[in-house]
Amino acid sequence: MTAIAIAAPAGIIDGLPFDEYLQISAASVTAMKAVALCPAKLGVEREQTAAMRMGSLTHCAILEPDALERRYVATDLDRRGTKAWDAEAQAAGGRELIKRDEWETALAMRDAVHAHAAASALLADAITERTLTWTDPETGVPCKARLDIYSVCPADLKTAADASPDGWGKAAIKDGYYLQAVHYLEGCRALGLNADGMPFVVVEKSFPHVVEVYELDPRLLEIVARRRINYLHAWRIAVAARARGIRLPGYTGAAGIHQLTAPMWAMGE
Image (cartoon, rainbow, N blue to C red; front, side, top):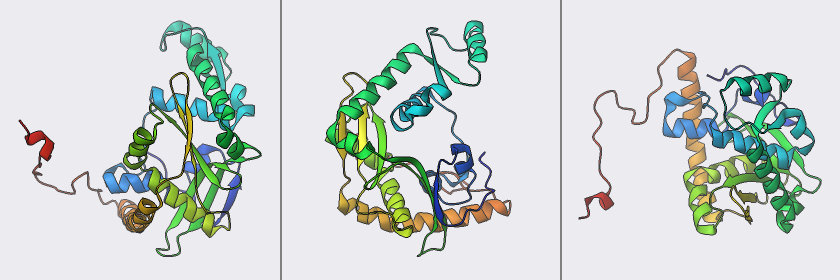
């Protein structure tokens, strides 16, 4: 479980290590989504999956190329958890061991992003991994965000199985990217940064690593902005309840038996 320990004054912090960012006691997009879905999961760190590991590697290759070889080292071994893997990991000197095909895929995705005109322009002279901390003016809730990219405007990098307008457009709704954009733009606005828009650079995980750059639908952004205020209130209530030792509710909020309602498509013959 992530400790809620460090309160940060409003400001912009460049180069803050990610583990220190996690310790800032403030509402993040991840925390708001957790409270909205299942309050009991507030502050619970997810176990790293292969997809998350690949995402971190790709982000480093694209956003922090100078740090890539300090953090990772490629291996020709193909099985994790073996004695040979453990020995090579120990010899890596604290760097994370990455399979050769994962390493090459991350570099190919990096090259694809830089070959895309709009994506390359957003990355040119950009500040990456910028931390924002501020107080939401409507709710008084302390907030935080970590921008992948800030140059002419804030931007975010996403890897995807499907970067098509239809496929990624659905993923943007399902995975909470509208909430992310609203929250990050509010942080930029509060701190005097450009908040006119937030493009998403999307690169496909599989060859030929198609890249698209999208702006989200402003109509849905307005709706999500109103929902965000409710999420911030819910976050404050959940944090206060946990601090008092109160058990947070699960998905339904019910202590008894919850009745499921089958969707209409399941009723068809």
